[in-house]
Image (cartoon, rainbow, N blue to C red; front, side, top):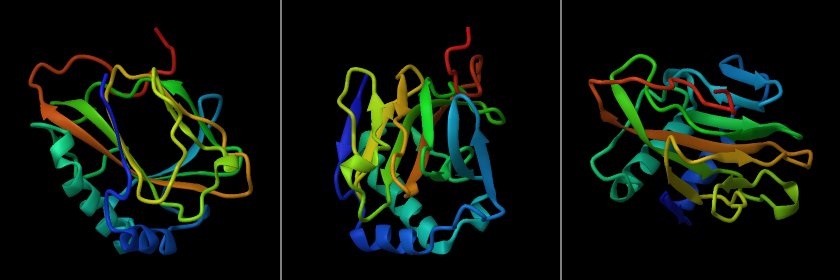
Length: 188
């Protein structure tokens, strides 16, 4: 298992611009995950993401190249893009999808970068990755980890704030795709 934590991976001004343009919880283009395994929002359409967030996502995609080897970023942002957790939001321990549901791609890395400029540790929302310490969200801090065999979760957000992150996934072409095309929250 490989985990990289990189502070200030993109210019702070890009994080601040993405945060300033961030859609609220009523944005009609959110997909809401709300149940026993998650309480979060995820963007569904790259074309509808605010321009400032696209600029930050594209800068992040370029910045992670040294960490993903021969993998490539899915610029269509399938299940990636903007992620937001409301107060009390969480993401239960899980394994990410192994394969893309539409293309013959195998996932190699998950990349998450915090956007909130004033996040405090007591707000909660830390990312936990197996055999690693918890990572408190800080503006411009990216976490890159191998998937899909790395269990991880996000602890509940405990304050009246929204946890905002940008997410990307890296892939390789695999013409023999067989396996999970969605996250595994402990199902056999």
